[in-house]
Amino acid sequence: MTLPKIAVLTGAGVSKGSGVPTFRDGADSLWRNYNPQDLATPEAFARNPRLVWEFYDWRRQMMANARPNPAHLTLAAMEKALPDFTLVTQNIDGLHREAGNRRILYLHGDIWYVRCTECDYRSEDRRVPLPELPPTCPRCAAWLRPDVVWFGEALDPVTLHRAEQAFSQADIALVVGTSAVVYPAAMLPHYTRERGGRIIEFNMARTPLSPYADETILGPSEETLPAWWEAFQAELGL
Ligand code: BJW
Ligand code: ZN
Image (cartoon, rainbow, N blue to C red):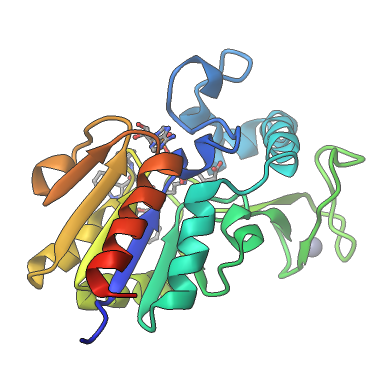
């Protein structure tokens, strides 16, 4: 029996069980009465880089203390077990890497990297908290910014293309813990559906993707994803 091709899209909900607040959900996503959607923009950074950096420095502290949960670990086990498996994440927290996944497509960047707003300097920086805000470029002294993709900015075209290819060829798209409202990420599972593949969604609540999903498994993904994988392995005889 040939094993199915699986593409996975994850969002903030997959890290909720690790104690990382989601982007849009409820009270714990609030920071100083700001709407995160208004802080994750190039305009906000141009207006007040220190404020935007304080927001990211705070999130870096939350993320530095987080450990992968059973949903992350299940995705790492799936990568090992399946020859054709692609993990695409909107998350910037690095928890998939820590769980053991080796091939990860980061659609919205990585909070543990900084890059220069003027030159092509880019570097890993894991210091928490950062000693100065905003940090400055060691090469040209301009401000550094988090290496993430803000609203209105283009995703890396090579990464996006690889993600589109994976979903266009997948037999099954697993969509885990995302509100499925941010594009182009939210488009990806539709490519699987267009080729006749299945969409299985794991979320606490229904989303705009749910009407298109073959199955929406409601509940915390740190519980539902390991249970699904257990049953699916038995089905495949793995
Ligand atoms: C659980 C759970 C548990 C909780 N278990 N589940 C088409 C239509 C309309 C608009 C657009 C469009 N195309 C483009 C746009 C504009 C825009 C967009 O999509 N806007 C919409 C909001 C309307 N998109 C863009 O601007 C993108 N760029 C672009 O299109 O560029 C075009 C261009 C081309 C060429 C040149 C120039 C430009 C860029 C989007 C970048 C998004 N960036 C952010 C910030 C990243 C850095 C950071 O984190 O600070 O990415 S925004 C934010 O949203 C972040 C997330 O990755 C992303 C998605 O959020 P996610 O992960 O889904 O989190 P939540 O909080 O929304 O949801 C959590 C879910 O988990 C919920 O459903 C819960 O129920 C669930 N949950 N606990 C399972 N235990
Ligand atoms: Zn520079």
